[in-house]
Each structure stands twice: as C-alpha cells, then as structure tokens.
Image: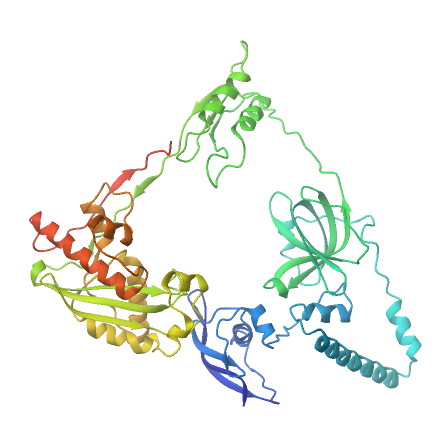
Length: 546
C-alpha cells in the first residue's frame, strides 16, 4: 500500500512555474530521496506536500486520503511530519520541551508519553555510545551538560543596538540587540507548564516578532506601550511560515527617550499637505494635535487636505481660533484631495459590423475558488445561447478544480468538494466549452473577471488566443440606467422584475444575465442601434462624502 502518493504536482510562485508535473509514490517502509541541483524544486516539493505552499494542479494522497491543499496544521493531525533543513529548534528549550512543542496539537497523551519515552531511550543509547567511544564516564557527560547555566532574563544588556530594519539582514542564529515599543503581546501555555510569550515591537520605522519561554513562576511585568531593550538570536520560526523571529535571551525595560523637536529656521514654513485621522488609511493624528504642533513650531498657518472628506473642518477651525492671539494669528487653510476616476470601460471588445438580430450570443457565468485568476480555479461554467432574441441552447458543467474549495466559497455557491470530486477537470472541459461558443459573441456580467479565467485556461490547455467579441452587461446597465446606486446582478434583476432563484450558481446566473441581456438589446434597438455597440466611456469627479 502507498503511504504517500503524489500525482502531476504543479506549483507556482506568482508567474514562475516552480514544479512541473512531478509524480511519485512511497510505500510503507521505504526511504525516498529527492535529488537535484539548487533551484530544481526539492524544497518546494516538500513544502507543497506539507501544505506550506499552494498547489495549482495535481493531487496528493496520504494513506489513501486526498490531502491536496489541506492546511499544514491539519496535516499534522493526520500524521504528516516535516523536518526542515538547518537549525529549526527552540534553542532555549530542552530536547524534551522541543518534542513537546512538536506534539502540541495532539490529544493522545498516552501515545505522546510512549513516543517521548522511545525518543529518550534513543538519546540514552546514543549517550552510552559516546561514553564508550570516547572513554569518558557517565558522570563527565552529565557534568558537561550541566556546566551551561542560563543567564538571567533581566540582567543589564550591554552592547550596540541595531535598528529593527537591520535585524532582517542578519543570518539565522546571529545574535543582536534591538529596542522598541510593544504594540502586541500574546501568551501560550505549553503542556510542560512553560509560557511562550510572543512580543511584537516597533522602533517607529519597522517592527519585529520576538519570543521568550518563561518557567511557571517567571513573570515579565510588561504591557502594550512598554519600551524594551532585547538581546537574543535571529531564528526562522517554522511554526509561523519561517518568519524571522528574535528568540529572546534577556529583557530590559527602559525609559522611552522623548525628544522635543523644534523648528529653528528663521523663516517658518507653512505645511500645505496635512492628513488627519479622518482621512481613512492615510492619517492617524487628530487635527487638534496637528494644529497644536504647528503652533509650537512657530508656524502661522497649516492646510488640512484630507482625502475626499471634510469632517475635520469644524475642529480645525475651532482649534486654530483657540491658538490665535491678537499678536499671532493661527490660520487653518481648508482643502480636500479629490479622486478623479477615469472609469473608461469598454462595453464591447472586438466589435463586429453585424446586425444584432443576425448575431449569435453566448451568455455565460463561472464560479471559482477565489477572485485571482493567477492562483484560483474554475469550479462551474454555465451558459445559454441566444439568437434573434430567443434562447436556443444551454451548457452547464461542474468542474473538479484539483484543489480544496474554500469554506467561504461553498457558503456563497453551495458547491462542495464532494460535488466536484468525480467531475472532470478543466483540461477536459475547456475544449467542449470552446466548441459550444463557436464564433458567437460572449456576454457576461462584469466580463473582465470571467474572461480572465476563461482566456487563461484556453491559452494554457488549447494554446489558442480567444478572439471572440465580448459584451459586458455591467457597462450596458450603467449606460442604460445611470441613476441606479447598485449594479449587481441581483439588484438589476430586481429592478427589471426578473427572477433570480439561486444567485452565485453559474447555470442560474447565466440564465438571469441572458434574460437581462435580451431586455438591454431591445432598449438599444429602441434607441436606433441595430448594428453594434460603441465604447462606453465615463469620466467624472467623485463628490466628497458629507
């Protein structure tokens, strides 16, 4: 029986095809090696099997169970173990404590105990071997071990402090000293009774994650906002995706150095580009504090220019007035940065000089495992064919994506992994869909999304570039109904009085889009358009949100 089976494994890093169609199987009792030059894909293959990198195509089974793209922590519970190269242990813990960390997700305490005893027997056997080969006594071996004493975690740290930015240039295992302010603390109690404390700090330019193991009776009186000096070693944390982490040896709580800035220029400037916390994702400071600081610098005015909002105006006016005197005025200059949206969007790509009534249309919709056409896959295609304003044919097909369907996608579409397990894969389906399309005009709601997936798979599996005309019903709706607030398929069907029973199923959405498209065609005919659609273009200023 095969313990592990890998079939046609494909892994991508962005646009780089790192693993191409690798297949192999491992039987019980076998030891298998992957041999190849640097960059051949050995590590990537192991990472894919271990659930550390996503698999685009192919299948992996463990003891007969499909484990393709199952998360790493779930694979551990199924018996999968990955021992990475290099030093990947917690150097501050004993061998036993490191083993306990490896068994953190297990609940079978008796079996864990048995496994631990097995490993301890192996260690004892190796110790006896060392003693015998090197002619030293058992007592000498233990003495050598116990000569090492862990230093105090709070002793004074001496040495040069490096910036957190420079920390990431260090090698694995290299010692350093950093300092910064705590912005996050997490605690995890281990089965041994120790506490793993995760401390994230920032020096104002960058941030890092640091970790320290504390005994049951050890405490660190720290909290968010505490300023620390830390000494330790850089370690690649395999439990956090090989994140560069500072494993702490010593902690010093220090006073945060407060430096009062001054503007010593003879001629004071005026800040003409200040964002407050009202400017979402741009500013983090209250307008009152900004104006107060400008006043302290001796500035006579300051401009507030938030993005698309004017919410800070009243407070800015009030604060500027507060800091103004008869001798020195403080002026608030009110501005606003506006977004100019060039939402030029083609209603039709590759248009034809052909009468609408003479044209054949294929209205289609797809469901996918996600929104990114570079990393996600199609799980359903639904389509209807229209000629002379009537539906003349239909197409519907579920597709096995070769990867697990995310839970939130199943919630939206009701498509489960069980439903697609025995369905054909996209390489079998895409050719049949192309035959169904023929030379017809393709129609979709928000066509760029659907076409991104379709054109990708046609190119990959058929090696052809799709040249059909494409119509986007989203842009048609915006053109025909410019005053609507929402242009989703469900909203438009409700506006038009059409039924949409199972939204987010390709076969139903394609039918709903087709019904809507037929109405749109009639409206364009009423406008005297009989031959083709022209490019739909809008350029507008977005009004500020009041």
